[in-house]
Length: 262
Image 1 (cartoon, rainbow, N blue to C red):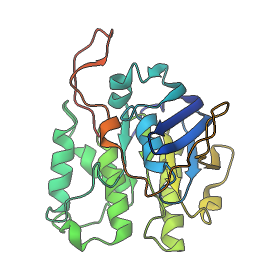
Image 2: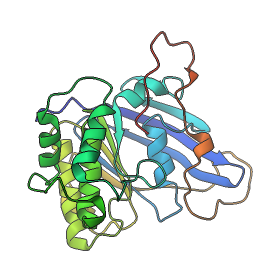
Image 3: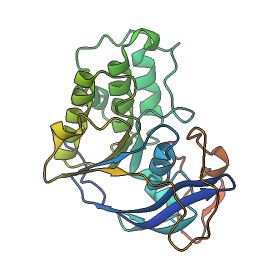
């Protein structure tokens, strides 16, 4: 499967703060096409919110952020067109009542444009699930298979930026290493991959010139800000901060109003 050329991501001082305090603070990095970037934080450390921001699905409070030359948050709709999310609680979790083939069929419908029939086969093969029985109920999948399926579904829209949350969650060390190698293989094929984790022990298995991180996610006050309370509690996805796709997003852009993939 030929991957689309990855998108360049550039962030300077990107920060999200709520009334409860900082979610993530002063994120600075540049990701080139064909690279894997890893961010690290414990649960509640802003991981999900950061990935939602980088893919145009959540509004940051401040900072400069460009994806493939598109400025966020102003051009969020265009960024959503070229980016995809792996599994993320409260955003796109798998439905245990469905079979694998049903999730794949739904994923093809969400592309919003025609796709070749072989795309599902290619996406499943790319994440190591070529031999999985697609009549299997999602509830019968192992945790590793679930995470791989989440990435396969994210590949169906043929994104240029792939964001994968909580790569290590619920996985043994061996399976963590397997997932990191899968993401690195996707990056080597041209995608820009940004991922998050809590446990960084197996990140070294994909270390190299095209891998950066693990980069700690900070939750202190932004540089120059007055002292204030630190954010506590779980990293609950702030649904009120998510972009919807009603008219008004990306004001000033002369384009249609496609659905986001969040």
